[in-house]
Amino acid sequence: MAVIGTSAASAYIISQQPMFERVRSLLRAPEAQAPAARLPPGQRVYAIGDIHGRLDLFAALADAIEAEAAAARGVESTVILLGDLVDRGPDSASVIAGARVWQQHRPLRILLGNHEEMFLKSFESIDVLRHFLRHGGRETLMSYGVSREDYAAASIEEVQRLLRARVPEEDVEFVSGFEDMIAIGDYLFVRLGRSWCTATPSRRHRWWPPTGSGSTPAPMPADG
Image 1 (cartoon, rainbow, N blue to C red):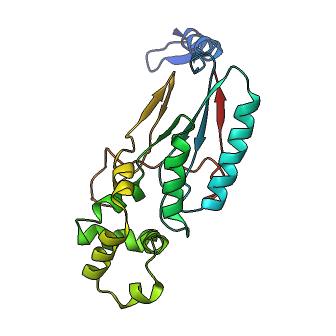
Image 2 (tube, one colour):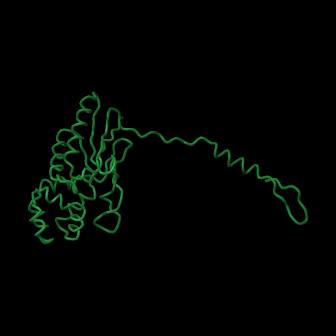
Image 3 (cartoon, rainbow, N blue to C red):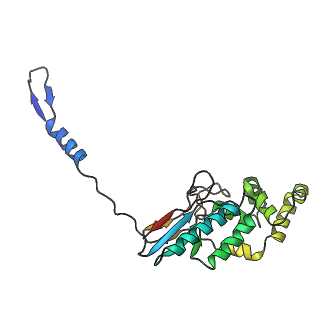
């Protein structure tokens, strides 16, 4: 820092050129580029956001992915469902069944969403069941054959008994096997957010926004 024009009363700072030059040189320095994330060679991943009981959209996506995968010779295609297969839409039971069948023919991995967490905990907890029903669980229950009339006439305890009676054990076991996180190459697939079931952050369910606009799921391929 250069100081000139001094007097007994004051000193006038007219130049801070060296300091400013150091700042300018930092601003001009090229930014370090992070290495691009990669999948293992020869692999492709389709990440599909919240399906929420929409079997029609899920089936259309599956058909499109299978057609594209068949045309990609020498590429192994993996599908990742980012959780929230159930609730809100009319066909949650069929979505679960469809995912289980698709997994038999295609590498398919599924994250546990907050709606699956509520679904599983509703078999034991009345409090969680209330949240589940409030956030689309009623439609899931009806997709397993519970009529609107029976649902409307039932107490919360009776609704829980209907849930236990109508949902097959194989569906409960299948959903219980959904994953917390999935790592493929340099990519880590997780859900972010807070649990519907507790007042504290949940390790198991995390919210990841839909890959399409709104709540419509869309494939998001990434190639290695």
